[in-house]
Image (cartoon, rainbow, N blue to C red; front, side, top):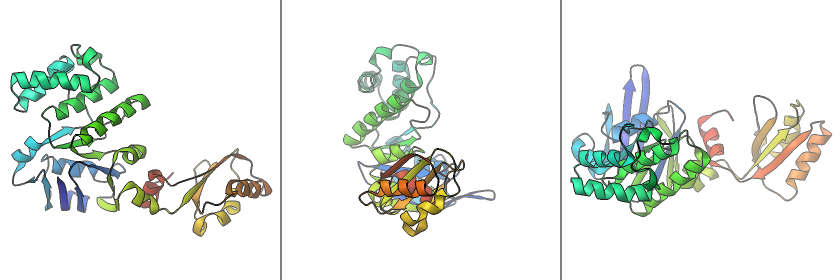
Length: 308
C-alpha cells in the first residue's frame, strides 16, 4: 500500500533524503523513527504529494505519487503535527466541512461525523467550539478528520506530541482500532515506546538514510541481550572500570552527569548482586541497579549515535 524506492531530495547543500526505500503492507503500521533532521518529514511530504523527489519513485494505494497525484490524494488521510482545525467551528462542523471538501454528500458527511464523534469519545463535545477543547481532544478530532473519508492509507506525523500520558494511550487505542478495520498506516514519531506499541515494522532514519529496517523484535536483537542500568548516588570515576567486566565487549555509556551507566550484558542469575558488590568494593554508592530486556531506545541510540 505504501512503497518508496530510492528516494533522493536535496535542499541546497543539505541532502535530506539519500536513497531511501521502504514499504508498508496493507493493514499494517509502518513506524518511521529518526532524530530531528533525519528526513522523516521530507519523505512524508513526498508520499503525500506535497513535494517531489529529485529522483526515485513512490506509490501509495497503488498510484504513482508523481504521475497520479490526484488519485493518491483521494486515497489518503493526513494528520500533520500542527492541528488543521477551525477553532471557531464546533467539532461536528469541522468534521462535516472536511467530509464535504473530500467529496462526501451533506448527508454522508453528517452521518460519518456522528459516527466518528462517538468512536473518538467526542460526542458530548461535538457541538462545542473547538477553541474550548483540550489538547488531547483536538488531536482526536484531528485524527477523526483525517479518516472521515475512510481512506485506505493514513499518514500520522507525530500524532501524540504534547499529549499527557492518558491522552496518548487513548490515541493508541483509536489507532489500533483503525488498523484492525484494514487501514494501512505510516506513523512518524519520536516516542520510541509508541513505535514499539503500535508498529508492525519500523525503519530508522539518520541523516537522510535508512540505517535499520525490521520488526521491533528484530531491531532489538541488534543490540544483543539484556541491558544493565546503574544509577549512582554521586558520580564516581571508579564506577565504569568496575562495571566493564560485566558488559559485552566492555561497552558502557555514562550520562553527562556521571550518575547513570548503561551497557549490554549477558543476563545471568545473581548479576545485579555481583554488580552491587563490585561497585561497593570500588567505593561507588548505588541508588539503583536494573537488568532488563533491550528496548527501542537502546536500538535508536546504538544506530543513530544519539546520546543517552
